[in-house]
Length: 323
Length: 69
Image (cartoon, rainbow over all chains, first blue to last red; front, side, top):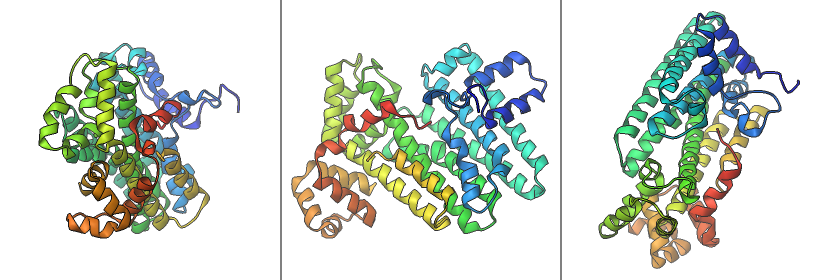
């Protein structure tokens, strides 16, 4: 393969767009926000590794990974749409949003990506002989999108989640979405309900690990002083939700006042991080990440005792480990 | 939310942390908390290691060099 060859998943999406009547500039805008997918591209521009989850779970369950490509492409389109809409709703200044002209065009592009995912699922429906399976998978996708959207609604309307609420939102936004990728692949690969549940649970816990990492990334921006002033990222962080859950009442008010003070000068940030370390926020995030890693591994081992595809899936857990 | 409470007490109460090291089952039972074997094993491993391992700055540092998206 040469540098200019486009990744097969992106090619599939391109072909699907070319079959529609959408205007070229709109297709170009949707293409711009997708992972680039050129073989040999820089790491930040590589196609998301998570697009391989349906194929790997299908293969590990005994099926042909090739038969999952439309479902995997639909999932990638949704993954991209969720990332863009999350950036717009959170007011982040994501490169992809700027590249297509700001939040207005980004919302429109997100609509296009959602509908492109639906069209891709339709392609899968046309291809497979087991129409019942295709209907089940489409229905599972739409239900999961509604769950994710519910989680996002709670996230953007609740300024300061409790620890319990933080976990419910993470389950809805990330756990359910990664569970969908793995469950869909396993359903295409086998009919064993226990195995399908194993891959579904694996994906759920993988998604939870990713959400913890995503939260830590927001914290990293604050620590590195990339973010100034009062940021939504910290107000809604797992570390703050934990601290407010465990700190004695007398300490909470003072900590909140300091945490939400603006502008956030470096010495204030250092004081907040010291307080979080003292109350065990780092240990808590590490423990939760490890807990989900163990649960994911256990689910995977129950579904797939040993196989090369299963090895790749467990490799993802090692890569995401904070240890 | 038992894990959160246990982590907080390990981090702020030296007597509880000592009791967790010597007899975790009793330490948890006395306070009415329950954790899985894996959770207990992980917490004990952190108690035996340097506190730097769980500091937020150390946790976020490797994130700058990798992508999980």
